[in-house]
Image (cartoon, rainbow, N blue to C red; front, top):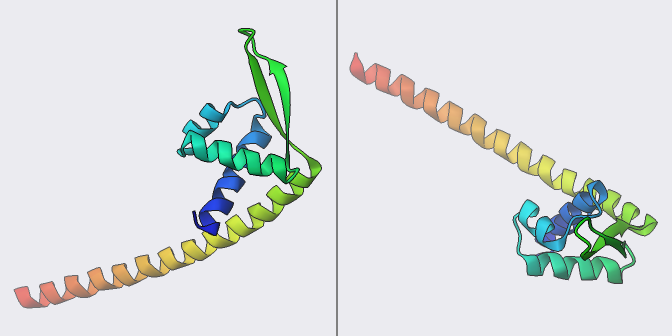
Length: 119
């Protein structure tokens, strides 16, 4: 796995857990569109780094479940990942806008050439 994909996945997992710590690994995987194994691997790494704490809680159907809570270290790490994620997305946005502009010019030029040929 590339570092960027790893950082994006960690960012998305941490962001989802911050919003709802009671999400199961299966629910996380489904909502993020990644494999259950990747979520499990990512969570283990976050726990090992001390960025996520695992707590038990009882679900309404009496099954034992886990809550994944960001630690203060995790909140700081998520903030850093957010900055990096935003920077990458802004660069992608600028490249996309440049491509759109070039394509618009290409379409206009082709339209003008076609109009001249019809005369």
